[in-house]
Image (tube, rainbow, N blue to C red; front, top):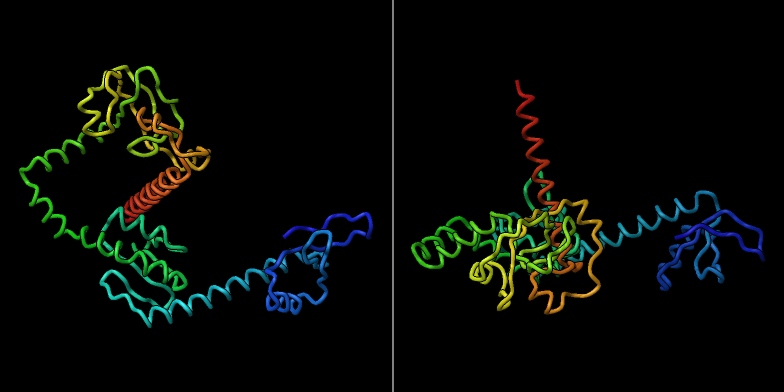
Length: 300
């Protein structure tokens, strides 16, 4: 939608233009709502005269979109009634589906791929509108399987199964290593500092290096296959703030094999999307923590 501009062949008129789907029903409804609207061949759009035309068109389009959403929600409800999902993690509430599961990164990643899914921080659950039922149904087996694996009993069973094994020792060693916030980089090819960089542990911001050599066995075990004869040093890093990640321009193409072998590259759009989601989650968690702390302080 855009405002009408001056035309040298006709006197200038106040108003606004808009494009519409080229179907008969949409055009008829538009003409009923805006009987003074006329087709503008030069702009290839409909022109509505009047100083408030832009606002009126915006309201009408919002109403049409809301009506379409209601219709899509009704179709989703009918589809759910015909082919229900029975699960302790899913509730079909009047307004939308409600999903409440144990914490699982896989569950979060799957739900975030569902159109219009939203995290309700106050109730600690996900909501998915009925119009997204088809996508929800396709992803539900993976969501439910991940949720079951994240149940406390399932986690305890897995811990008991690997207790005392090499797998447990390797898992603990990996956790200890990641907590050090260090990453191996080629001694002769350091990444730029304080900008978003793609790595095998995600998008991070390097803060510097003191030149300490990284052992090849550690690199192979916890990060990526180190190149034979290549010298690596440890570089410190931090997670990115949301503002930094939002303003980072993504790479135009995925990293080449040489960059993967090197261990760092310019992040792709998909990598940045994951990092931005994580940054938003961290910010919400910090805000909830600050809110709870403030409420406790205010209590007499």
